[in-house]
Image (cartoon, helix red, strand yellow):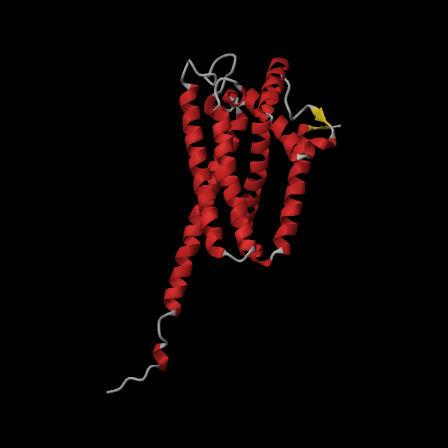
Length: 237
């Protein structure tokens, strides 16, 4: 039996190991910047977690309520090694998130969490997966199209989600309202799990800017290469 922190670390180790193996197996994948590649692969892994959350929604609600009432945390609870399986890790991950970060993820009457996770899985996760598969099959055009859809959707998804969450904090009728029973603290320091969403907004923005810069530099190189070599031109007087 090991605690939730160790479960997460083992999951990440397995993720990076197999992602690296896949990258070395297909030569074209090595043309992707390291940060971009691993983020695309992590977005694909996140899609598996999100689909698992949607499928296990009812049981996550029950478990999350138990955790909150008993003041339990995934990080300190102990589990067997089978919890490194993505669908089992997803269950305890969203249990913690719903208990101590966003309670709309564990409500039966409001499916906002399902909409956010479902749209991210379809647009971002599938976009990254199809993009990677297209690059493996040497279709660079479709690769850039699907990766752009994935990262653009991820940026918008995270921005809208966080914007709505801050509105909820000041709405007394909302389950996420800042209160003594569910405090948020200055800069959300009492709900630290929410900080992960800022990372989900920063990374796609970072990648989009890099892709635009890469395309700009490539266009400049192509324009430069198309200029005739003036030394080889003969000037007739």
